[in-house]
Length: 403
Image 1 (cartoon, rainbow, N blue to C red):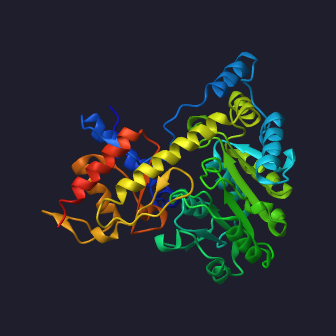
Image 2: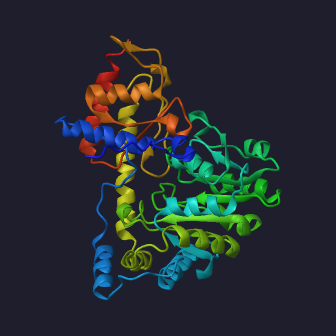
Image 3: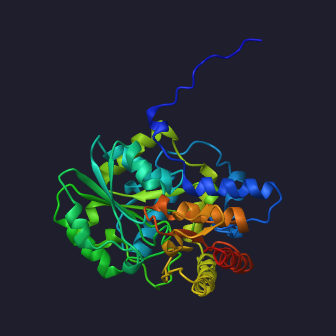
């Protein structure tokens, strides 16, 4: 038998990259569950609903109709036209079909833009708290993340004045989500307009607006920053089907952008994945052009769950919670527990806090450190009411033991 002696030689890129905190916590929860423990996982940002039947049926029909081949790299024209119509209908955005690229999830859309637009040393302003992969994607594109933090007292929103102060000659674009993952905060029309006015004053500065949670919005209205004329030609709008249509495993995302950016992103995507699945694209086109009642029903159920979780969290001493207006997360400040202990277990930070709850009462959450907020944790309420009630009950009991 020949013994393998080759050295493991990972690239510096991989060695410097952190594992996704949400995926890591989900795996730890699965490991405990496999050992027989009754784990309640509120870590992943994944709807617990199934994809609506009419969308699944459209995919089945597409398979029967032979949509099993390669598609154009930027996507089927039928889907891009549906996205263009949706942008006009829902967002007051005027992206033509030739200004849209369909990708394997919104995550790839953001990566495409990063790889297509950034040179080594370019700066990207990221509004924090932020989705875990933003900074890593920027670094992979050669960019330098510039993190602008906010806290619960500000409803986790960064002011236009803070953004203005962070802009330098190296700033290439501003990246944020609204509704926000992880906080659930929603930037208002007035707040977005103020940010747009800041960006408009700086030539060659762009915006990447991640609107993947658009349909899970409890304010009754949604504003896309790209709808403001002063930045309409400098906004890349990211969206997809994972959250609003419960289609996480379908991996269909999209972007609308100026034509030169679309051309560059298509070039990048053509070398990595080519197009998304043909039958998935057909189903996605049907999702946008058909009745959105199932999507709004899911939104209404999320709102009911949010209210339950907030009410229960407020009953736990020392937990600070605001009232998020979108997505399916709450992002409480739990820093009052730092320094407390149970035996040899000391809660020094949010990481320790989450590990303590996972190992003692089998509730899986995600540390806020991964989102640029060291004092917080993210709780996903994409779970049944019974699970949510039981999870917070366990949290309250476990935290009550700390001294």
